[in-house]
Image (cartoon, rainbow, N blue to C red):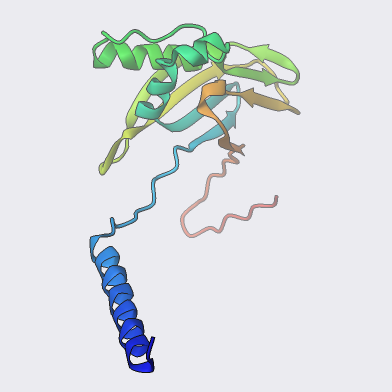
Length: 178
C-alpha cells in the first residue's frame, strides 16, 4: 500500500470515527438522577407523651406491602390487596406501620394510641406524606427512649427531640444550655 493510500485510509477512518461519536452524542439519552426513597422520623418526647412524625414515600412503601416476596420472607405480615381504594390503602399502610413500630420508655414497651396520615409534605411530590403516631407514658423522668420501625421502610433517618419550654416576658432573652 502506498503512502498516499495509507493517508487517505487514515483520514477516512478518522472522519468515520468522529461521525460516529457525533452521532452517539446527539442521540444519547439525557441522564437524570432519581430521588432516593428515604424515610425520616422525628421522635418528640413531651411530659406524658411521645409523638413520632414520620415522612415517607407512600407509593414506594405500598409497593413493598404488595410484594409477595416480602411476605414470603416475613418482612410483612400480610400482602396489601390490589383492589383497595385510596382511603383503604392509606388505612392499611398506617395500620401496618403502627403494628410494626415498637416504642419503649425506660425499657418498658408502650402502646401507640393514635396513628393517622398527615398532610402532603411537598406540593410537587404528593407521594411523600407525614404519618403521625402518638403514645402516652406515666414516667415523671424519662432516662431512656427507643423506637424501631417497619423493616420494609429500610433505613430511617431519626432525630430525637425533647423540647424545653420557657415563658419569655416582653423584651426578655432566652438562654438554653445543652
